[in-house]
Image (tube, rainbow, N blue to C red):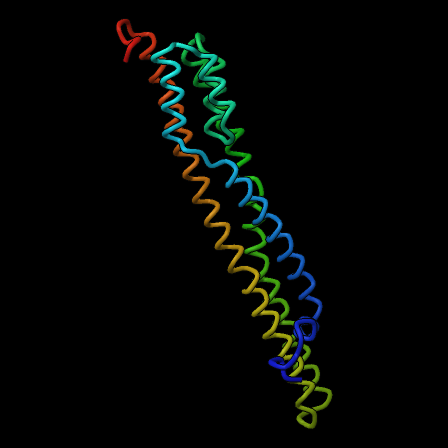
Length: 216
């Protein structure tokens, strides 16, 4: 049967049992991709605007409660670690830093949730495709041993299975790997912004403790 004229199900069935494992991998990957895309989208904020509002509440009005309320207006890791640091206002600096580090570790774990699954799927999918390739070639040689050259269709069927699973494995792995790299880069940006926000908060506390800077 000509694949160009066949349906998706016919193409799927020609790939053999490995195609079911690849289908599962693709579904798992898609679920994680959509979940991570939505989670990271919701975490986006205007970082500079947020930091300016917090600094204004602390430096100009010396109102920690207002700064905490500002954090509660925003979603995402940056607002969360700032709120954790603000709740420790007045405590020793090393205690504040430990609190921020703990909050940052928690937020980083949330940002990276599911990325290990994407990495695993992107590595497993090509291997499953190669497994299907080996299986298809075994079937081809087995058919060749049984029927010889009198029935080339049996040999072609095994070769078809081998090529289909290879293509399917790569077709699953490539977009999932691209998504994994994209999400990893986004997480990296969030990490830099969290470090910046933590430094800004500590510097702001230092300014608040400096005499004569209340109107800065």
